Amino acid sequence: MLSVANVEHRQDEAIGVTSSRRVLIKAAALGALATSPLIGRLIRSGAALAAPSKAQDAKILQLVLQLEYLQVAFYEQALQQASLKGDLRDFAQTTLGHERQHLAAIKNALGAKAGPKPKFDFGQRTKSPDAFTRTAIRLEDIAVAGYNGQATNLTKGTLAAAAEIVSVEARHAAWVRAIAGEVAAPVPVDKPMTAKQLAEGLHEIGLKG
Amino acid sequence: MDGSPSFDRFLAAVDRDGAIAETRTRAEASLSRRRLLGLALVGAGASLIGSSRARAARGLAASDVSILNYALVLEYLQASFYTEAERSGALSGKTAEAARVVGATERAHVEAFRELLKSQAVKRPTFDFQGATEQQQPFLKTAVAFEDLAVAAYKGQAPKLQSNAVLAAAVGIHSVEARHAAWMRELFGITPAVHAFDKPASRASVTEIVASTHFIVAKPQLTKRRRPKYTG
Image (tube, rainbow over all chains, first blue to last red):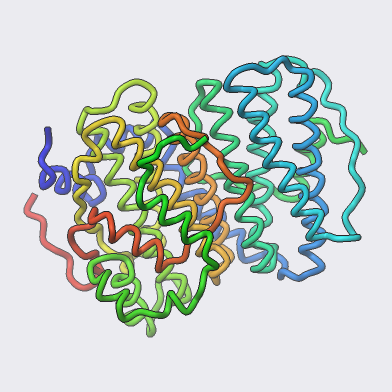
């Protein structure tokens, strides 16, 4: 076993100029070194965003409302129709509970201005455990990317509230991946989606109209 | 549900902090805090704010530099923890695989922050994980606590960031830490997502929690002060 002093020294090497090749090779294999370029791109694109305002918050929340409505409907229908068992059923039930609370919070924030419940057609996506798993992974990833993409467009207060939701969506995404035996956190930085991409993603899964 | 009665003290402390409304006054009550944390994050942040009044890294606000260095220390902590666990050879199966992926990610986060901060980046502190990297169950328990803590820490800072660019990067890392937290929880056999809303933790409370672990055994220093000479 390595002594602590040894480990610390080797960590210094790994992070410094005299990088441990082993660490670098592993990181490269995982695509982890893509982090810096992505952050660079985010940083270049950050400057061009519109200034946050209460009116803009409301527009963004209307879109997020559709996302949360879709999530609730998806998990409700899957629990009835997808023959979910064991871990997958536990995941769907717990996640449904969270999505209902998210939906209530967004509705509450929008008050009387909250848009109506949309219509959905999930097709075969809620009809089998496999289809459910694939769709849940996609849906939770879309939720994370959608919320993250709006971070710089929101006022600070709304951002703080959204941040309490997005990490729970990320937990769902990792949870269902782990159940499926997949790498639960495949990238070092989650890539954001624009509002347009989020809307497209919701339609891809089953949002109508 | 969360079935581990001896569940980590610093996770418990995060939850407690979430219940208490986060107060700025607490963060500013620095006398006892500074005495308590002479060796940890606040020291690093405070000295940075002092030194960066004149010139911030890449045009970042001094407060952003301070937040980024605080995040960097958390990333150093995590990267070192996973790297040491990997090297200890104590992990097996899915846990070993997860530790390899998460470790590589945390190292990438460290690199990204150092790149962003350049000469204003704090240096890696010295850590002593007190055996937590040498057995699978203590490793998982500590990993869960670290990841949940990181999620709460990023969440606490996100609304305070001045730079949109840094904010966009920070939220992308914040959600990855949440994925890690869920993954480690699943491997540890506890519910990956307990609550519908994840609560933030203030910098003061995170710093206190980290200090309480005694995992940091030497103070992080500014690299700009003077680079130590490596003979290797």
